[in-house]
Length: 425
Image (cartoon, rainbow, N blue to C red; front, side):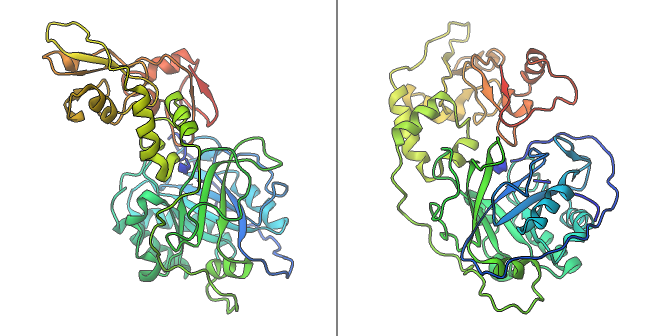
């Protein structure tokens, strides 16, 4: 096979672009597994930012490896021309240590048939051995919101391999893939986090089964022995035989597949410390929307209510200018909706922000309401350090007017690669 990688997402995935090809390599690997049937299984997924991970020793029932991005021309970490150059080694370590495996394609929203063909061409040596998966996320995805795109991709993969793929998406994006369970016999893999606290494997993750999904990713802050970084942790709702049914549907195994019939979203959540989450939100631990919304999950509204109440005493200061604009300095945890609400100057869309997009603001910026010169507020200013998360780039963190200064400030040069966990100033 010619390999082949995965932000979250997260779950976005950080990368950069440039060009190069990968030679074909079909690994003949033995698949000897213990005959003991298991109930639900625990595993992790990795991308181009876990280069060098020893999948043989990091504990798991299964390992899912990101293999391809788009249809080429994408770089970052061990990703070269859209292919994870470490994937063969990562998969071999998992297979040789008795783990089940999956391979996924990260959608960039180009032509879906072309991206499906690129994926299959690069993972052909793992077809019928590993579960085939589409990573359908908002980050870097030009087709996000197009419900037909993942369906066309899945049909093409089925045509080329005879295998119905599993579709990964965050819970908030489920509406785009809902129905694929019955329309195309595709399993659904949902990402939704109750909190962003460090955790190991969980036997009953929050909301598991709420969408009738076959698998749930419940954290991107997982901690497992054998790897010093953080990992995406998952719970598969089935045993090894069920997993292999997804990888090789022609195998006449007797295992029951997990129930994939969608069920209503639960209305209750586990007890969490909302005040602690609000403190972390104000501190900037969860970034800005949409990353903050995904990290907080169904706690988002309650946490933001606490955040807004705490910050309500600080309504900003009037910055004198010839246009008479009312300007506020953005604080950690702020949204334009919160600023507009607490200052009584609504709607939020009437405010001017440096990026031009009211959903993209940063601590330290001045945002202004009214006045003829409101649109001429100063350039983006960052007064605190920033810890990079998967899927971010200098542009998404600092905006079009600030990323070059940030690169210079942090000693970065072309191709300006940054890594999850890296601290920027």
